[in-house]
Amino acid sequence: MKRFARVLSLAVATVLAVSVFTVNSCAMSAEGEAHRRDLTAEEIQTIGTIFKADQYAKMYPDVVKVLGEDPTVLYTHFITFGIWEQRQPSMYFNVDAYASRSYDLQPLYGDDIVAYYMHFCTHPAENAKKPAPTIQAALWDNVNVYSVYDFVKGQTLAKKGAVPVATPAYHPGIELK
Image 1 (cartoon, rainbow, N blue to C red):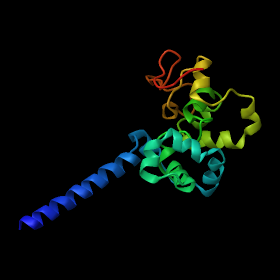
Image 2: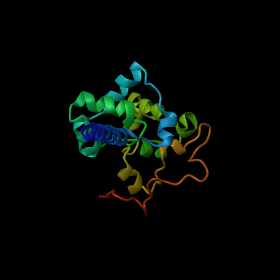
Image 3: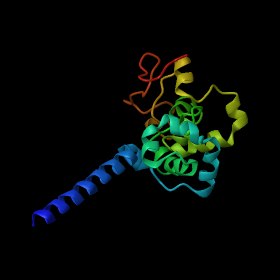
Image 4: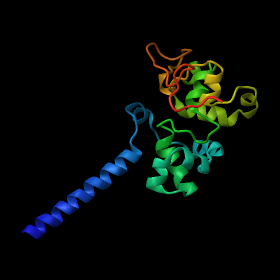
């Protein structure tokens, strides 16, 4: 009986440990979960043009720790979880910064995170004329950066009461150069 109890407790501990680490590595905010949907084949292919696996791996060691460094696996993580968690596909694109600076797109797309990605990827000439879509560049230009989920269709600027994720005066973990 003692041996059975020991084996059972070991099995329960193993299941708990695996579930805790798996859930934490793929956990997302309620906002991300509320917006999450399956991407179309066209969206997956188009967004893939700005995904850089080596940069994603550097920025998100928590993902690498669980999934490894295979570029296909990392991209699958990004389109399944990362995009909804507002993780960056590369060092050169941040969807929150892009949405916060794109006053013309806010009323069109609101909180549709995929629409901002698709617009960025499919309008390279237009985006070449705009400032870099990074938090650092936005802060350097004195722009408050809001979560893409704080925008509302038909409205310019973030919804009333929204708190910026970064401001020129408050930007934890971001070095301005």
